[in-house]
Amino acid sequence: MRPFESRKPTITGVLEALKDPNITRIGIHGMGGVGKTMLVKEVLKQAEKDKLFDEYLFLVVSNDPDLKRIQREIAEQLDLKLEVESELVRRDQLRKRLKQENRVLVILDDIWKYLDLEALGIFSFGDDNKGCKLLLTSRFYNVVCKDMDTQKQFEVKVFLNDEARNLFEKIGGDLAKTSEIKPTMLQIVEE
Image 1 (tube, rainbow, N blue to C red):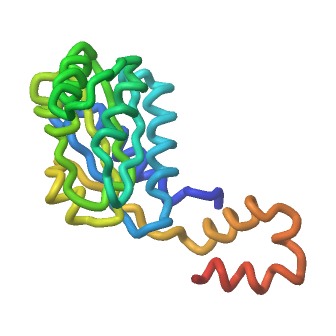
Image 2 (image 1 turned 135 degrees about the vertical axis):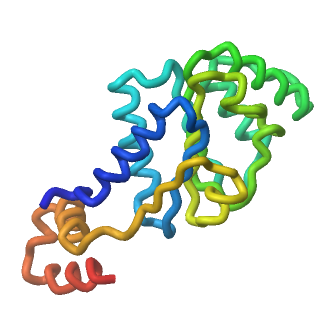
């Protein structure tokens, strides 16, 4: 079994949701460290290969979101200069710039709580931006499914034992296959 085989149906499902014109908000949730970010990066790579969007924005939010930092990172990825301090003016500039795009995918990774998309400049995202999508990840089901009002949700579960062992061996290389490390590796994989 190749690593991440169990992730393929989720990746396929997320890509199908990205292609669905009626879905603008997609949520991915699962416990911390389970591989949500890696899964999203694989989705991003495939979406770019298939040319699903014209622009791709990837932002890490984390547990204490800094709206100005997030706005600045969005602007940088859009080659937009935000030279004002006012969050309201910055919001309006970002909203205006995003409306210029036909198809944009905004990925907000590692959301811990409700994030005010209007304050960020992603207000009415998808309503008047045909083809624009929002992909959110969180370790908390309620955040992506209820607080952020996603239309389609996917859960990322822990690896199957074979996948975890293969990943450990891939990272550890030849050292992971030695008799000294193997018993510890098996305990780590079980955990």
